[in-house]
Length: 276
Image (tube, rainbow, N blue to C red; front, side):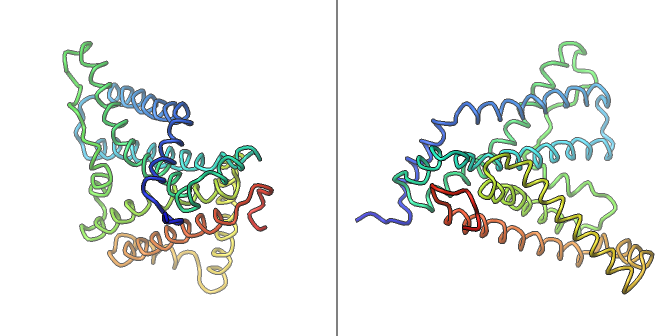
């Protein structure tokens, strides 16, 4: 008797089915990411030339990381769009694969798959920059290929105002964020399959606004803004505070993915209500 919770062959078959049925959406997303980065890398090279100053180098990695973060949450928000219609829910929820396998298939394609594909898009965009600009300038002011495979390390390393120990913990935060942020929008895709990205973004903005107001009220009651600002400025580059951020990011990662899995298990064909 086959394992009803997880079977590797069944998982691979479900993974192949998802890719085959949605290859156009996936391919269009990859091409769009590559195209945006190629255009901005070419424009950036024209503006900065072969400038090697630390600020310019960091700017390059900041741009790629920003595209990575923004594109990652958009792709993750597409994971469970099949739940939008009753036909889609019937097809998805009644397929032969188990509940766990269905969840892992979407997480693999729309989160882990994106994390693997994105550096490839970044490198191809950088090579496109060279291919477009090199013939016109004979290589002058056109830097050679830039390694974006170590993007997170370089992004953390070029934060010159932090000590090395704080940079290490900042890099840990970036690595955790690679899964935490998409996990939040994966959760949003489970809760709101229709217009998932916009609804999740709006919910996050509303929650952050409420939390910000509560924090401001708390500061005004128990302290004052100047004292808090001085404390933040004093400890911002410290190892302890960055370690705290890393722990907080890890907690967020666990909460987002656990909630996504728990709410996914509660889905049914009849209703989209996540509280049912």
